[in-house]
Each structure stands twice: as structure tokens, then as C-alpha cells.
Length: 453
Image 1 (cartoon, one colour):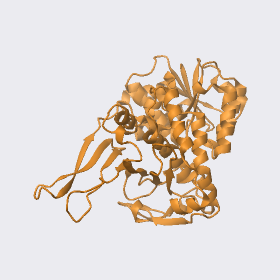
Image 2 (image 1 turned 120 degrees about the vertical axis):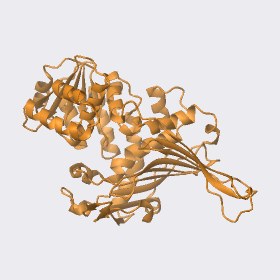
Image 3 (image 1 turned 90 degrees about the horizontal axis):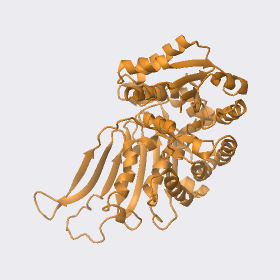
Image 4 (image 1 turned 60 degrees about the horizontal axis):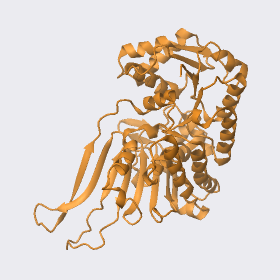
């Protein structure tokens, strides 16, 4: 790629993630010297005003990056005012850029289809790439329609449906631990695994994202894409290679095997809830419905949990529990693989020993294995022990890694079109059952712990 165009350059995604990623790549000298970056948006700003806006975002979200690298980004980026859904405006906004171009749609998902259509009519230069953020569509039908539209204007290997979770170090270490070590893979099945928990609890609230989040909710925002992708990495069969095609094929196999829940199962195996006013540490948090930009009549959930079952030879009967929530009192982000108890316990103690649990901790990156050992006193009493290791920080943070992969044409950490459709096939019955009242919307005070409700 010789140019990067960011549609929606003044939005939260660009300011919070893309501009800091550019600065980190600049500091790492990962850009070609003549690389061009252009922001495109509707806000009536000139170059100087946009660079001031971008500089403020870099100061806030990339303060750890050397100031020289931040200034270099500001010097190489320019800005064009354009309606990204207007083919003539899009064509004019890219006319003077060297090609091929990576088009990053840092936009609300509702604009994806019209922007892709405008791009196609404006003329997409050969070998260019199109990058879309999650969620990809709002249900299975819309994902299929968007895939059909993209297939008319670009080849699959030039379409990047990004999920920055897949670039996180601990997430990638799921593959390393499973497929580079003989010790775990023989136990990685229903005979030995009791359950798998995939959790992303966070104290953050809306952080100015109500215009998107209130139309999405926790199930669409987190479970449908991020957590299902983590489920794929835990449950997939060993791929022949870690190339894009082999990895995506095995992930799709998993998604196709995930059982769609019936309305009755939705009522028993899912939870939806919304935070009310409360306190997180020293911070007073208003009721979700009082947040600016929220429509209370939508009944948007800020907490979602569901249990999935994978109907295949390896995983039949093992519950995979997905959970994510906002405004919670503690940050928990991990994949926890709980192993079954031993078939016969020879120790005569009254209490059951703690289960063996392998945890992949995400942010900060850490791996833990809980086991039982003989106690220091009576050698026939068991005591829990934990083997753990902190992982060295990534050379490049997740978004920077993804951005570099896009420019290099490596789709391994992207999501293939059929993956997105299968993920919606799993979630659509839950959303339909919720809309029909199968699971009432609960409430929890901000600052609660997820295990309390």
C-alpha cells in the first residue's frame, strides 16, 4: 500500500485507536518513507484545524509515544471534507493519492453499505483494500447482503473485517499453547474439559459512544464478534498451517457446529441486564438511561451472558459460557478452561479439592494453571497451587499490529465473510427471543460484580 484513507477521521475510533496506531508504527519505523495518510469526514475543518484535533487525540491516547513520532504523523496526514456516501465526493477526495490505497471505514456500521457503494462508483484503484470494523451487519441477512455487495467490488483477499481482539498477545498464545505443546492437546476435549468461560467485564461506561452502543448493546458489540472469535480459537481443530485460509477454515468449522438456541433455551441459558446509577471507585456513574444520546425505550443491554454448546465429536456436552458487561466493579478479561475432577480421589479430606483451571488472562497478559499439591503440614491434605507467568509486552499493540497486517496484505487476523455470517446465525435466535420477552431485562447498580446478579 502507498496510501491509507480513513473515512470518519474525526470520529472516536480514529482518535482513540487509529491515530495512536499510526504514531506507534511511525516510532517503530514500520512505514514506507513516502506513505500518504488522508482523513476524510463531514466536519468542515481545514488541514490546520484537523491536525490540531488529531494532535489532541494523540496527546490523550498516545502519550507514551515519543513526541517526534506524533509530530511526524501530524505532518504526513491531511484532511478532506467529503460525504463518504456520495460517489463524486469520494472520487474527488482520493483523486491525487498514489495507489493502491487501503480504505479504512472507521464509520458507524449503518454506513458501510452506502460507503462501499460510493467507493465502487467512484472507482477503486487496482490492488486496493477495504477495511471494515465490527459489527459486520446487524443480523445474518444484513451480513449476507454486505458480503454480496463487497464481492461485487473487491476480492475476498482484499477485504479486511478486523477484530482487534485477535491481535492481542494472550489470544494468540491460545494457539501457541495448544499447537506447540504436546502436554495440553490430548486433554483438550469433552472427556477431560468440564467447561470453558470466556469473560470480558469492564468498569468503562459509554465513553461518548452512545450513538453506536445504544443501537448495538453488549450482545452485538462483544459476544457476536469478539467472544465468539475467542471461542473459535479455543475449540478449533488443529489447522494444517497458520496461513489465513487454513485458520479461517477451522474457525468456520467451529461456528457451524455451535448449536442455535431455541426460545426456551434462550430463557434458561442467557442473561441480559442494564446498569443503573452507582459508584465505581471514586467515580459516580449515572443511570444508563440518563447517559447523553441513550433512548430508554430501546431496552439496550449493557451486560450479556449466554451458554453455547458445540455439537461435534470433540466438544459435545461441554458448556462454553460467554459473558461481557460495562460499568462493573472489577475488570475481568480471561479465557478459563476448567478440567474435570479426577475419577477417584484417594485423599480422605472432607472438602473437595479445587478444580484444575487453565486461565489465559487478557490485559494484562498472563497465563495461570491452578492445580492441587500435598500440603506443608499433613502430606495427605491437599492445598491449591498456581503456576503462572507474565508475558512480555507486545512489540506492537493490537491495533498497530492489525494496521500493519492490512498494509502488508496479511488477512490471518481478519475475519472471513462466512465467519461473520455464521456468527450471526448463532446470535439471531437470541436477539429474536429477547425481543419477544424470553429473557427479561434485569438491572444492576454500576460498580456491581458480575457474579452478584
